[in-house]
Image (spheres, rainbow, N blue to C red):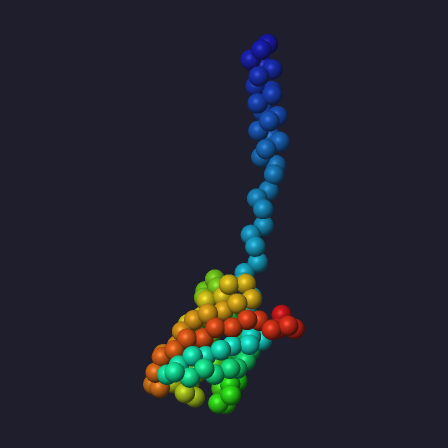
Length: 124
């Protein structure tokens, strides 16, 4: 009789535990929005705005600086890291996002540098 009671108790315990579902994974990081950015290259500091739009499967973007604007191409987002090119000036960027902040570097025909920034208000 004790074996039956133990087996029954074990079965009820396992049954209660087995019914729980795994927690939902967090949604993927969404970088879309507008970022106030600072670009440092060749001893110069340039302010601007990086704007990312579209969907996670088809991101679009542009960068507007004190020196002009350009459209982004070949945008690839992997977790919180993004790469893209700016064909108009022959530059490749690599960014890492941390919440509303971004930091990264770039390299191209006119040299290398760094970029950092923060998502602006209303850039959601």
